[in-house]
Length: 164
Image (tube, rainbow, N blue to C red; front, side):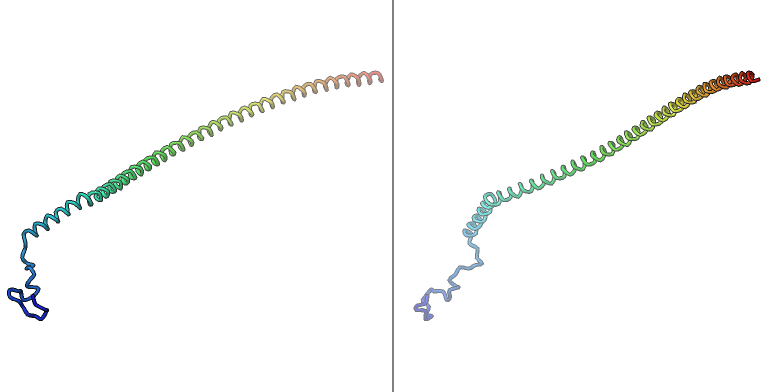
C-alpha cells in the first residue's frame, strides 16, 4: 500500500488496486460448486413450494374451463335435441289437429245434409198432407156445393112448378 497516498510503494505491494483483485477469468471450483448447489436448491424450492401450487391452480382452472365447455356443449346438444323433439311433436300435433278438424267438418257436413234431408222430407210430407187436406176440403166443399145446388135446383123447380 502506499503511505500517505503520496504514491510511494512499499516492497511486495502490487502496483495497482486492480492487480490486487483475483483474476475473474479463473474459475474457483469451490465457488462453482457452491453456486451450483445454491441454484439447484433454489430451483427445487421454487418448483415445489412456489410454482407447484400455482401450476395446480392453473391446472384446476383449465380443468374447470374444459369441464364447463363440455357441459355447455352437452347442454347445447340437449337443447337442440329437445327443440327438434318439440318441433316434431308440434308438427305431429298440428297434423292431428288438422285431421280432427277435417273429420269434424266432414261429420258436420254429413249432419247438415242429414238435417236438410230430414227437413226436406218433413216439408214434402207436410206439403202432401196439406194438399191432401186441401183436396179433402175441396171435395167436401164441392160435395156441399153440389148438395146446395141440388137443393136450390129442387127449390127452384118446385117454385116454378107451383107458379105454373
